[in-house]
Image (cartoon, rainbow, N blue to C red):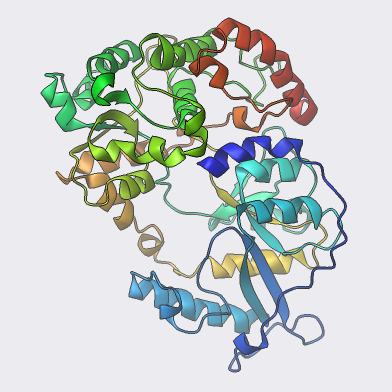
Length: 466
């Protein structure tokens, strides 16, 4: 999350020309001697394909036993993935490697070596926080330039086309999306305060911002470091925007066909005022300068049992309460005052997620695409194996083994209308859009909106108006 905040500065990077002459990495010791080439590449020589990423991944040409992954936990899956790697090597006469460039290193490689015409990697894993700016800067290959219309619609990859774009530059392997951020709560604290379970209120259509604020106020005891809410403000802002049908920087045209910023809309103003009430007026949570360098405290302090409401993504639950001591409750975010009866709300921002981008001007991009298609298709026709959700189910169950928690998580991303698209965290000017000024009581909401609305509009005009 700390790195998430740093990526808000991405659009300010100066794209320098760097002629680094970075050679494609090849380790002769990892060559598979038993590979039988069926599709010769580069005059019979093996093509080395490098995938730029910021974390260790498995399995590639560098691995020859499943234990090469020190954290392997599913032997059947690992063996299938490793054998699939050998099949891909033989079929395409290639070697494939992940290059762990680190988070900042991936960004630097994209923004310098691609522009210089000598990319460090053939294909990059990109978080959309920096993948979108990379596409806007022209650093990716358009899939339509080398794939047929039929190939563009294969069910194995999910293509991601920016709103208003005529071509597609980003894609990822299909899988069941369990990456949502439902609102988690400590059931014991709710019960001790003689408050009704929030999920019961949600089922009756009574889970609203007003009730949520009332709960947070009643559950806050600042003197004893008990807080009604604690979590990073970034996801908080996104989820509150969606829960009130609002957006700040959506490139979706309005009824007149114009792309208009939403910072000064009634819906967004209500969101910002609600957050100010949380942090300043009612003091049910807090944020200060130390919090920017201590994201873990905001993510995981609920695991100590003194936080009533928090973000409940599966990976946060796993890291914040590894012993699952807290009786975890999970509920969709409460609805805001501008939501109309029957209105369908987005619950997951598509700007979060990991996609592939083939580097511009790479030799034979279709080969790269086909290799990735076969490489990520290790599961064959067994979609249940591909979509194994056991890990997420385990952590969402909580100490009381609640199936409702996992079902709530899945419900946030199981339909196309659940997915929103707000680029508020991509906007860059003198300083990235943050709401520190509001939640740290440095300015009023109206002042913040007036200062920033034209800058958001300029960003949308520059990148999406055409």
